[in-house]
Length: 116
Image (cartoon, rainbow, N blue to C red; front, side, top):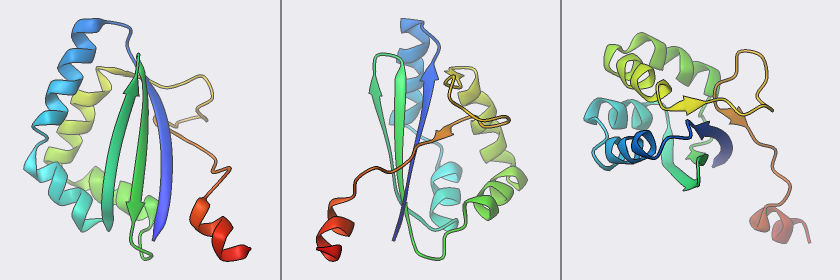
């Protein structure tokens, strides 16, 4: 299994943050299906203030680039992504063209135990 961590900020507007949370209580079925089809096993988003942290766990065959290409071809997933972007602001550490910034892993308990 592969793990990926990403971060992004939300616009500093309590009403928009509340609306963003509301959308994620009733995520569109097409988006869920797209995640599952791409090989994503678990996708969790956490919030602290206006900072989001997303943790994705995917099967070993998961290819992030291929997943993004497939998402770009699905009309409902494009609509969802466009809608979510009205709430989001990339963090200053994001690379050129990067929306959600990929985070570096600095510790993994399972990996540590298996190597010691």
